[in-house]
Length: 200
Image (cartoon, rainbow, N blue to C red; front, top):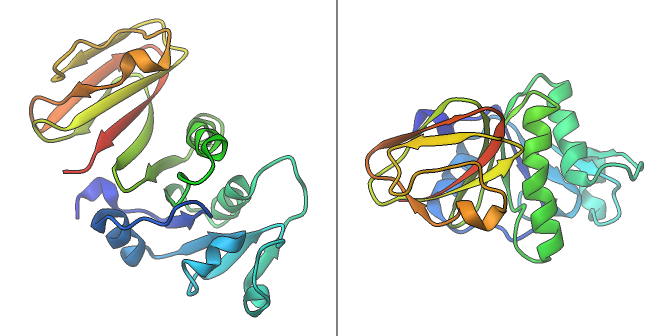
């Protein structure tokens, strides 16, 4: 397993549970697994269940950390729990699929966790993974890997190792459907952005 795919904890949300071997291997290897409310059905061995408890089966209530406030969703409540334990490298599974508004909201939360909470979060799906970043960053890749870049306020973005030169996209769709040329690519930016990469 690649070094950057090792995490302090995995948070499992209540979206579509993955079937791709990479997110499943990361889940199996995780030192700590936290379930968001009803997602405990996917990971019955999770050490804790975090949320408002409205969809947690009774047999898991002894592991429930019930948080009733509604300012944050269950994904953020679980993230705050991990932060309190000192876990900073966090993988998110099952955070996409099902309702599209939840999917968009959960993906955008990655940037909040990175920028405001100081975490190193990555969201894994069956097709690839999202990584928030800032400034200059080198990404491990493979030739032909599909790459998308989503701008979160940069006024300048430059790239090395991508098929098409990156720039400070004004619309999210403009940064999609790029491609890595070798086993790595670099981005240089004056702010925050999110990168999506497909699995090999």
